[in-house]
Length: 273
Image 1: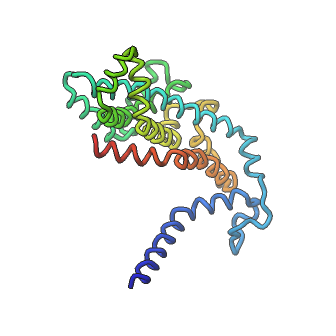
Image 2: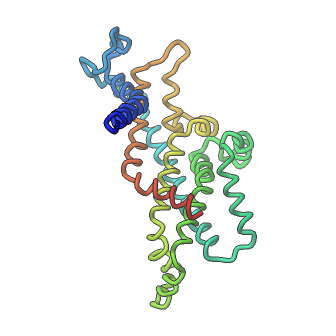
C-alpha cells in the first residue's frame, strides 16, 4: 500500500511538472527551429537542425533595447519602493503614528485593487503632469504598485527586531540613522529581498500598464515589444517564442537566487503581520 501511494504521488508530481514546464520547453524548442520546421508533422520535440535565426531577427528588430528598458524600469521602481517602504515600515513600528490601524488598512486595501482598475485616471493624471510617454512614468507607477507590499513586509520584520539593539548601538556612539543602517536593515534582509523579488517580477511581467502609458517605440518594455510579432496576417512564431525564452530568463534566475528569502518573507509577513 505504501509503495502504491508513493507511486501515485510520483506520477502526480510528474504530471504536474509536465503541465508546468511543457509549454516552456516547447517554446525553447520552437525558438531553435527553422521557420519551415515549426509546424512539421510529426512535430520535432528536439530540433534536428538547430538555428539561431529567430534570435538574430530579434536583435535586428532592436528587442535588446526593450529588454534594457524593462530591466531599468523594474530596478528603479524596486529601489524607490524599498526606500519609501522601509522608511514607512520603520516609522509604523517604532513611532506612535496617529491613525496607524487606518494607515495599514489603506495599504492593505491598495494591494487589493488591481492596477487596471485605476489605469484611466492614472493616465489622465500622467498626461496632466506631462509624464505620459516619458521614461519616468512607468517606474513611478510600478513603485506605487509595490509600495504597499513593501510597507507590510518590512513592518512585520522590523517589529521582530528588539528596540534594545538600537539603544545599545546608540550608547556605543552610533547615531539613530547609523543604528538603523547597521542593525535594523540587516535584520530585515529577508523582507527586503522578498519585496524586491516580488516587485521585480510584477514590473517585468506587466503588459497593460506599459502599453497604456508609453507609446514611443524607444520606451517600450519587452512585453509590449513582443506583441508586435503578432501581426494581422499571421504570427512569426519563431521570433515570438525566442522572445518568450528571453523574457523568461530574468524571472527564473531571480527566483532561483532569492527563493529562500522570497518564501521566508511571505511566510513571516503573513504570520507576524
